Amino acid sequence: MTPSQQNLFAEVIGGFLINFGAVEFSSFLWIEKYSNDKIVRDLAISLRLGQRLELIRTLVKRSDLPEERKETALRLWSEVSEISVLRNTLVHNPLVTNQKTGEIGIIDVKKMKGIGPYKIEPLQIDQIATAAKRISLILQEITTPF
Image (cartoon, rainbow, N blue to C red; front, side, top):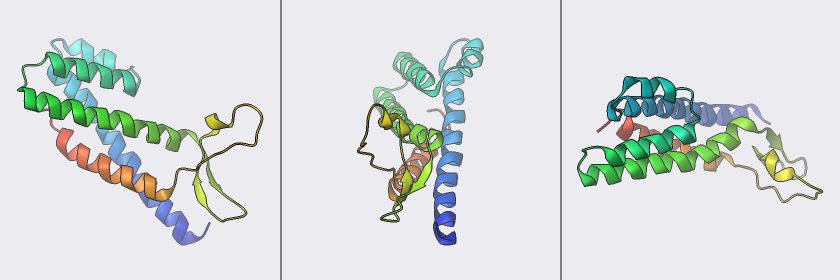
C-alpha cells in the first residue's frame, strides 16, 4: 500500500468511525429524552447498538411527536441501522491487498466459512466514503432529539 493510499484509508475510515461514535452517543440522548425513566438510559448503555436502535424506534413511536417528525426520526434511525452493518464489517475485519490486482479492501471473514474457494467482495474505499458522508448528514439531523 502506498503512503497516499494509507492516508486516504486512514482519513476515510477515521472520519467514518468518529462520526459513527457521535451517532451512538446521540442514541443515548434520544433514549434519555423519550423515555419516562432515567434508568432506561443507564440500562441502554449496556445494550448493543441494534438493541438501542430498536428501543429508540419504540420510544419514538410512543412519543407525542407530530407524525411527520416520527416518520423522519424512524427513517433516520433505520438508516443508521443499515449503515451499522458496514461499520461492523469495517471494524471487525482485516484490510487486505489482492496480490494479483493490487486491489485494497476490507474482507468479511464470516463469509469464509466452509470449504473454499470463496467469493469475497472486499468493502472498497468508495463504499466507506459514501457511508461516511451519509452518516455525517444523519448526525447533523439527530444530534439534538426533535
